[in-house]
Image (cartoon, rainbow, N blue to C red; front, side):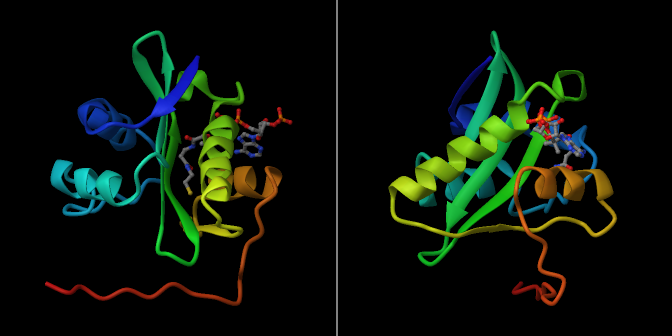
Length: 139
Ligand SMILES: CC(C)(COP(=O)(O)OP(=O)(O)OC[C@H]1O[C@@H](n2cnc3c(N)ncnc32)[C@H](O)[C@@H]1OP(=O)(O)O)[C@@H](O)C(=O)NCCC(=O)NCCS
């Protein structure tokens, strides 16, 4: 199992993994090939894929807004779970963020994604129940 920087050439395989993974909130524009290409250009070297030989079995998107890091779309193929891949992907992204000067990282999880939330807490993340997320469509 090898973790490498995600490239846009990984898109089709990564998107297929996201589509087959519970707990993913996929957005038509942001998660399109064009959207992900823009995200990777905007946040170079921060997003990763895990490969078993050539097959992509895990992904994490990571970026920042100049103030904090943020993770999206952590997903591990069902048959590769509980082998440390999810944690390793998160650690790679956090260590890259740390190396470029960030000391805090956030992520969003669906309230109903109990297993996902349990994983995050288990690996040391803290929920902020006093904060809610808001959103508005721009166009
Ligand atoms: C959440 C997910 C990424 C975890 O990936 P994974 O590769 O199985 O996790 P790891 O093997 O790295 O687990 C690291 C540790 O967390 C534990 N863990 C994994 N999933 C857990 C869960 N659902 N609840 C509690 N602990 C969990 C592991 O046992 C391991 O413990 P250890 O270090 O003591 O051995 C994977 O289950 C997944 O893709 N879920 C669906 C997508 C999802 O919910 N993503 C998060 C969206 S917010």
